[in-house]
Image (cartoon, rainbow, N blue to C red):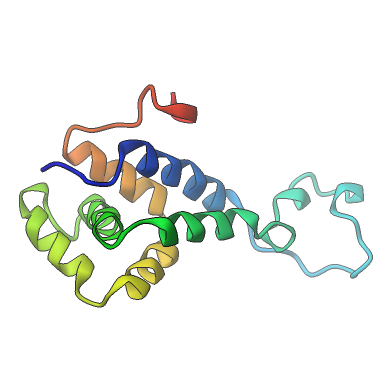
Length: 135
């Protein structure tokens, strides 16, 4: 199996997906409250204040061509255990069944996207070691 999507792109998605997964749901507070003034040290990581990471992940996926997008989804499906590495062609076919918009929606809705992509790479003896921020 040889990917058309670059390993660097997949690794960047993993980094950003980890950041997205690290956000916690916002706690309802007064509208004028500044999360940095709070006694709660975790208030600044609440996702209400920072949608930029979600937008970046979505943008990264939007920028992929059709084949690359389906490969990313297929990697996540293999990493999730829906398909085995030996079933790569079937995973690719399933990834492209509903079109690009649905593929992006599936990826954005995966609660453990970073882990699935990482496990998918591992299934093919690939890794992000030594690439960018993932050392």
